[in-house]
Length: 319
Image (cartoon, rainbow, N blue to C red; front, side):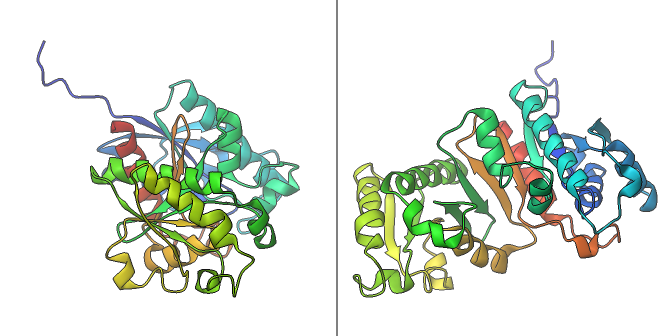
């Protein structure tokens, strides 16, 4: 037998997100792109009848689809999400998780969901990350948003801003630092430099602008990470942590709450940033944007972030 037998392309489960938004369009565009099919086999998870309508409207080929039907397709209006579209997007993600856990697919790439539609459908999970953690039995997990220019790992995820101070723990921040170190070590093939942001203005200014979160909670996590051999600086004042000069010397940031990391990331890399869930037993990446209901089914949606997410998922599978 020849040693040059080609390795089969990994099968990537791509959930199309809320079908009232741009998810079906960007998923179909990616699935038919030669830049994607040259290294993986995309399989879309979502309502096939809806995908056929979108494919026909924009003259796009239909790829392989795992059909998760929409309950009332005749009521579907592009740009208007509902409990039905929320339920369909949830079921697609759940099916893709199960397929990947059962090794029918090698990874999951998730399209944008409408979290309000999940709520309207009676689904308790606030987003993809929490559903993935629950369904895979994962207790320690983090969200990393990453691009060529900036990477951010979140110590807390989808919680109200007022709940962040009481949710932050030294152990939780330390876990986020460790996951950031592991993820960037595998990418860079060397130990990364990690910056940990403070919670408060000016990182608390020695307690002047805080209730001591930096000294009581964040600094001990940094100290323990350094004892473990990680290259960590901080707590940094959040308003200067992301300047060009700072970014030039930092490989990944650990941020205390959702918007602290996502605002600079989306300002710098909206079109090519990728969401990666760290700590899972399976590979999951995602777009870094929402459903864009105002652009739904108009043929103008930018699919660059999903292209990047698929490429990263395939790359992580190969490692």
